[in-house]
Image (cartoon, rainbow, N blue to C red; front, side):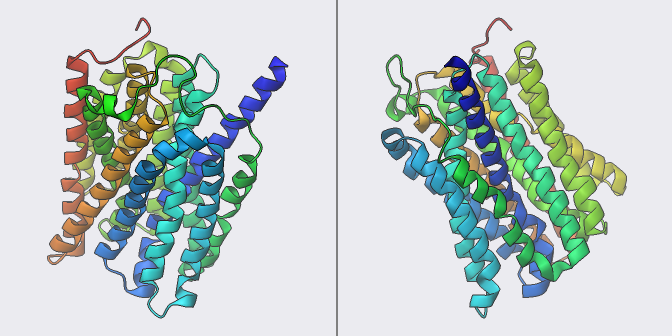
Length: 407
């Protein structure tokens, strides 16, 4: 019996890994298509940045709206529906030019649909993994979030090469092709065993109690800043390399954007393997400082190779900022349920939406001088995000907020 249970929960973990891979598709696919969409439909950088804002704003709304409902109804109906929304949204996005004379409103609506799927995945997958009976929850959480990075690598490399081989006008077929993975996982989550959304032992800690905890408030700001640092670099690097550095898209995406995601995954895997020997807040502070330096190097360097290396190093620097904050909160408040993860996810989504949107406004405003100057100014402004994350983590470390197991 115990063997069957172990195998079953392994299938649950695998479904969660595929689910967060799907979330990586939701977040990273359209930024890779920014330049093809801009050239084919005459979209401005502000309109493109607004799609990122719509994506993450939708996820924020979903995170908050469904947090209490999930605790009452359980995980399954919502995690299954999340993959259905992802498939439907991608199909609607690809169909927008066929249905509308001006497809941008269709792009925005489709983004709401697939982002609702991504929001539910973000809300549910971390607490589902946290509910799996194991003594290595930190490792499981890091491995889970590393699959986001591997998903980002695969999406960037595969989409870039498909656009290069098939032509930029083929983006609709490419987007439809990406529906296969969430469609398969739709079926997976109908069958795997799932734990309870609330702690099964001890008193449950509700949002009212959490809201009175300074550590929790600072954690929300920290995850927002960390998410902004991650998504801003990931979302704008493709356009920056192509337009500011004159690097061909296929080279810039595969050596810059994909390398960023690869190092993001490496950082999370390393913590998953050696986390018991690492003081997490210190590692996160070091990562935030690395990210801030990398932003400056990418913005100011006139040597393409150095910019590419800085982009890659930034991925390693931000790797622990989002999942590390979840780990810190879960250790600090072990009796909090899915609602805590929902609010933290909402904080991350706010940072991930506002950060790239602010950068897009700077890019368009400063772009009146030159497109290259505008893109460099946008990256410079982005340094505020890792700096804010560093300040929050410093506060948390000074208050001795980290609860470790002998480290």
